[in-house]
Structure formats: structure tokens, C-alpha cells
Image 1 (cartoon, rainbow, N blue to C red):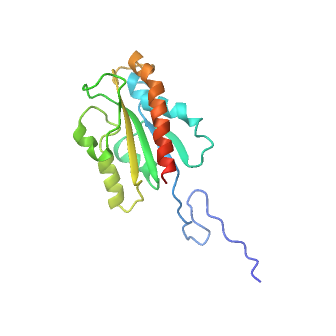
Image 2 (tube, one colour):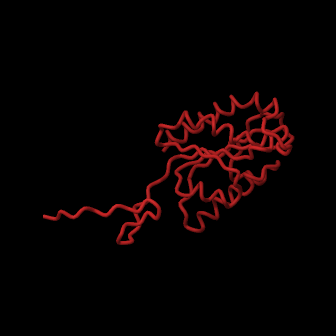
Image 3 (cartoon, one colour):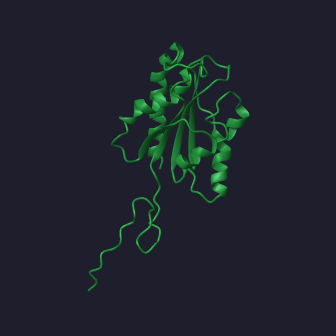
Length: 182
């Protein structure tokens, strides 16, 4: 009779004492709010994440995060996710401020508009896959047309304040769809 207790993985490294990696399990669906708190409308992605954090706090299928990072730094957030929803401001000048846009990540670079956070999302995902990292199979983007994402300020413009409830509702539906589809 073997009474040996199996070794538990180290919570930081994920390795067991005999240095075998712990089995990888997919991380929850990610809502990643992108933006900058001190650049007026650029904070809309952060505001959406903050509004939904409590809603999904007890749903183990969904994790809500926020960041001001961009480009390759997003790999840390996206690696080993089953699916992700990125929410951010954009300024295309083609639609009124507050308009909700849902571009395909593969078409993002060709779409145009000013948004440093989402620049290179498709390339970042492709690089992660090339490096052998487990990238999400499903990625959605919810972009909100900004009136002013560059002026220093800690409040959204009136157009984006008015659009915030619709953005939160749409992000909530998209997250539920992503979680239910897995």
C-alpha cells in the first residue's frame, strides 16, 4: 500500500518539488479594459472593466482585468486564454463619438484610426502562436469612438459618458457569448 502524498505545485513557478511542470489548464475568458486614466476618453475601456468586475466576480469562467499596456505586453494577458474581449477607445473620425465598433482583430491594422493599445493585436496573437504560446482562438474587440482621447483629464467627455452604459451592456453580452461558447 502506497501512502505517499502527491507533491503540490509551487504557486509561483507551477513546478512540483521534483521539477515537473504542473498540468496547464486554460485560464478563464478575459475581459481586458485598455486605456489611460488621465487621458479623458482613453479611459473608456478601463471604465467598462470596472463596471463589470463586480458582475463577473463570482463567475469562474470570466476574469476582468485592466491595463494601460499595449503591443507585445498584451501577450502576458492573452497567453493560455480560451477567449478574450478587448475594450478600448478609438478615434477614427468616421463615426460620431460614442459609437460602438466591433472590428475583427485580423482586420484591425487595415481599419485605420488612432489607438495605440490595439495596434498590432493580430500581429501579437500571430507572434504568440509562432513562439508556441497558447493563444486564444476567439478574440473580440469592442472599440468606442472617442471624442477626445488625448487631453489630460480624469473624466470622460459627455458623449462617452452617455455611451458608457451601452458599452458596458454590449461588453457583458459579448463576454457571456464567449463564455457560453466554450
